[in-house]
Amino acid sequence: MQTARTAAVDLHWIPLGAGGHCVRFNGRVFEAVEAACQHRQRCALYHVALVVELDGDRHTIELAPSPDADEASRGVVATGAVGSRHVGRLRLFRYEVRCWSGGSIPDLGEAVGGPRRLTSDPRVARRLLDLVATVPTAVWGRDELKAGEMWNSNSMIAWLIATAGLSTARLGPPPRGRAPGWNAGLEVARRSGVDGL
Image 1 (spheres, rainbow, N blue to C red):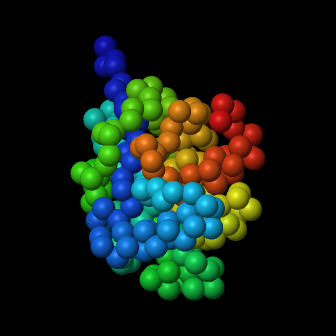
Image 2: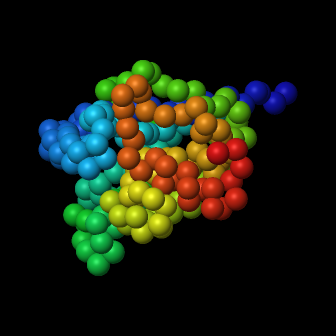
């Protein structure tokens, strides 16, 4: 007798800089400048990560800095440049896309509002995991894909969710929060003919 497959895809909104003072400070400066330019109040900034459970295995999916050459130990499936393709050969200016079986996300405990369950369908969870290695690896912090805002970790996760066929209509950061790059991921997915955005 075949056992029932189990699955869960959970989204986590994590305050930008939850794991480090430098990122938090730079994020506040960035948001202060953006808010002033757009004549609006400042918002709390968030980045997003996914945790996928499938048949007893737990996978963490995120975009993060590349600390060393031991990429296999972190489930790295792709890399991209930070700021400029010219300097992306240097590890300091490189990011990595991780789909890490049994992995961890250091600041996951700081997530606001708890996990958002996106699906419990094993087929969708498998499709999402298979898509991670195909995410666009545009230059981080630039609008290289002409999507209206910079490409970053939020862009990658938004693209992945939409391309896997999950609805993004009611997804968004916590109240009074902003997720720069999120709409860029949705726009790039939409151009690929993804329905239901």
